[in-house]
Image 1 (cartoon, each protein chain N blue to C red):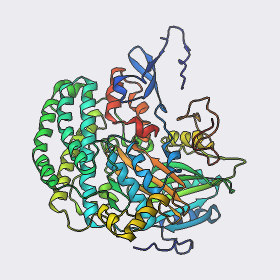
Image 2 (cartoon, each protein chain N blue to C red; image 1 turned 135 degrees about the vertical axis):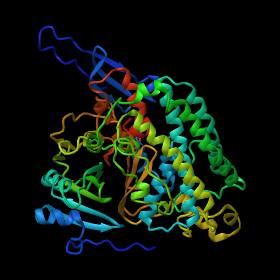
Image 3 (cartoon, each protein chain N blue to C red; image 1 turned 120 degrees about the vertical axis):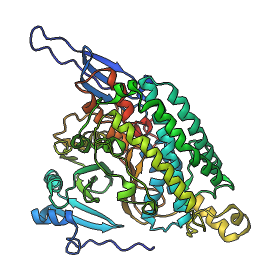
Image 4 (cartoon, one colour; image 1 turned 90 degrees about the vertical axis):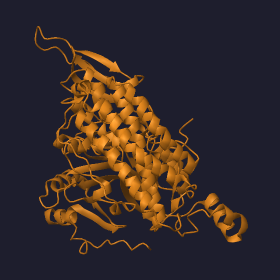
Length: 401
Length: 165
């Protein structure tokens, strides 16, 4: 447990500072973040996040699993965007294998990845607004999020821990009629974003709590390793989906929202505009969904269809071998990064040629983004710490892993 | 698509901005270069890692101005045992490079990059906590994930997956 001692009083008459402990059981720390604050009256002098309460050793566990068994673990890192983690992991393994993925699987991945982004941003928007005191938005956001979770359930059988993307494609073909439901959702969702914006964007109280609060310059953001909307809110125009595309993102048209101010409001605007861009990508993915198989033609890596497995001897053997022995991956190392809702999510996987990964490291966006908190808050008011924590959109599962 | 064989000949890889820059500065600092699966890996001498990073960060043609990640791989029982892995990104040129330093188990020490990127702080603390690699010049090298009184470094290969009971 981290400690903090007050700065010694050097000059006579100088006010003494005090240490305030915030969390780990604090509703606005989004999980189990503990923040140590040294305060002088209402002003934060020094801030130190203390993490590790949710450390479960996932990286170590991965080393004891077959490659395909790691996929469910990746869901549990960031429980608000499971598909993004699935995607990043399977892309890295596919890069190690040199596997080519059919277009339909790539499109499905883009479709569900963007739905996940919307899901994650809705939770962020609801809780961030609730932290600052606008309670209604939370209910509105969770209303739409529920629909997205139903899509996840339809396609993977699970609402949160989806494990839908597999090495070589996706787990199952989406059920009939699901695309029509998603199209309906994509039709009315922009109006709902208008609704949220009506509640917040022009709201003078929201403006007072967010504009000019927790500012960060672009130089500081880059030096501290910030990515995603936390970086784009400070005016740095980078989005891995556009700049270093993966999974056919180069075939989609979308804008990357950037704000220059670097305050809480700028980061809020980035994410709200991303909601609109994401629903645009969802629509494009539905319109251009190619036909064909949703799994790669690699029988020793991809599990066969159930029907084939039950009727064909060869498929049954492949199924048995993949389940019991896994599949060997050529030795080598890759770093695959994707743009998660929070920033650059990266998987560094080292293979030694066996069926289990030698090392899996997750570069989590929140872990780096959390370092910006001290920069944002020191010298400012205590009440703004809550706004700053909300604005960097942390998920402690991803930070502690 | 079958995998292309890895390229390890430095003469063929000099077109890469990072290799060219380091090679022009001090050819002896480069121990191994490898271009595999579209990714460039440069193993540099451990005493030069700070200067190499400073050089790449300030490069005018292709500044690798963003430190994406710092991590470590344990090759126990082989020597040199630890490989500290740095991933740099050039935001203006959208280029990535992976730098590595190899450390012996007898003295797992390397210079800290916190003076170049303050964001290296947490990453290096994590490597220290889970691997026991020490970073010279780090402002606050304390455990970050495990409790402060924890014994051992869990991600080392000689540490059992189930922990000690």
